[in-house]
Amino acid sequence: MYFEDRISGTQIAKGRLPAGWTDYSAVIHTAQSFGRPYTAVVELRRVAGGEVMFFQTGECYHQIKFGQGERHVEDNFDERSMTPEGRYRDAESYLDKKALFYSGGRPVKLYAKEAMPGFVEESELYYELQRSRERLMEIVAPGITANLQNVCATAALRTYRLEQPDGVFTLVLGAEVTASEYCLRESKEGILTKHVITPVDGMNLGIGMTAEAFRREAGRFGGAKTAGAKAAYIDWEARKVFGLLCTGEPDRIKIATLRDWIGAFVVDPELFENMKRSASDLTADEIREQNELFQLQAKRTRDNRMAIVRNGSD
Image (cartoon, rainbow, N blue to C red; front, side):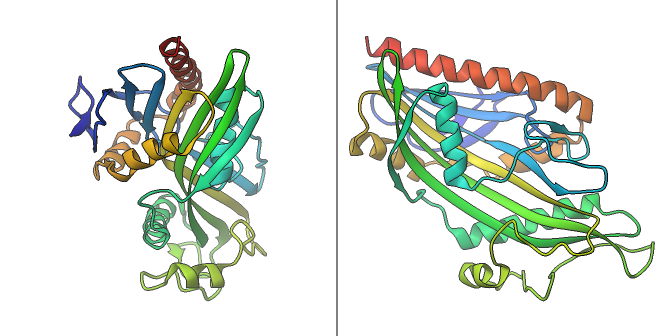
């Protein structure tokens, strides 16, 4: 079946509606960042009650490694990139933080971890490379060269045990995280130069490079050489976030429920491209103001899901 916004008809994804579940899909027109001018959500509820599954398009973040007159401030809104500041997290670390968000800071225990269904690292590295080149072409200026130094792609599916005042909850989360690392240097060719240099430091970042060779030659992500650079940054995003929330102790059946749903879930190929086109209509001030609303909406969504699970389990 197709999951789409019931007001605009915007197609979000196609997938399977498990027997005994109802679905709700929506496009929420509140910007989290320039890269996420809106959020697409699919939410499933078990008819018998007590369980919620969900998908949402994710978030974008910007890390300032260093810059002239710039300093990284976690959770600050960066006007230049029109993106919240956040230190890079791989998929596992991103999900761990998400689990604490759902627990409200109460104890969280990792119960199980496994591979994200359908994730192919090599193809995601290639797509992130292409996206990074496009982004950097938009920010270079006369006399400045943007050096794309490294890209990475990680994914994870993790299950948590949440302790709450009214009992134990199971939270299963999955996400894909991609990131690019780059720096800005003065161009040696003169002030008329406007281009992105790839490869950097002799690295072949071309289409033919395998994931294994990329890891071997690029080295540890986040530690690229920055000698002589004017500024260095990391742009990263969670492109897909999945979850299952229910009461009771974690078990393999609950994990399999979400894993099977993810395995049959295909995001519409135009969804993220349409986001890119929509972002051009927003100013930095509008995105900053909407980002504050986005955070409030995220808390309300979390509380609503917890309430659905609690009430359905009574």
